[in-house]
Image (cartoon, rainbow, N blue to C red):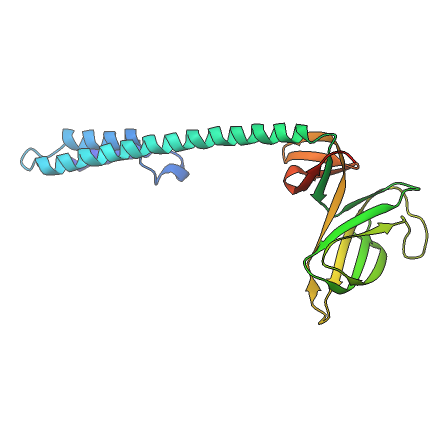
Length: 225
């Protein structure tokens, strides 16, 4: 067999991007097989068993390529269906009362903000910490003996010194401890009517009380209050 010709065929078959050099496609495999047959040594030709084995290997490669292509098409169809269902579901949530995981706290002058949170078990001591958009603490309120499950606390919009803060979006952090001083896991929620749906590159977002939350963070949906 003329090794120089075989090497030339091999180089042409694999002249592609670096990330694909380790992948042999249907066309590349066929090129190598044809080159091997064309340039085999007449004194020592390829025996029938070996040729049959290579044909079987080629058939297996072809089938695997077809299966992989089918799986990719199925995945694309499922992704498109999932996006369509998510968009339809999001649109149907407008006008409904929605409860979603969020640490955002909207504050409007004259209206106290209700902060909702859930504890995985009861806490002996609990601090509700209000943060501004810069992440700076503006208020800390200590509570005692808070039960497990859903809880709430109303914030009047004042800082730790009793001064009223400007309207806008704030954030809340719950620091809860049990009898032994260990941390108690807490999840904060926002609840209200979903007034708008926005489709972004980061996914679908719902507007609840003026705060946007990803649709994946929605926990409960109910009729308008």
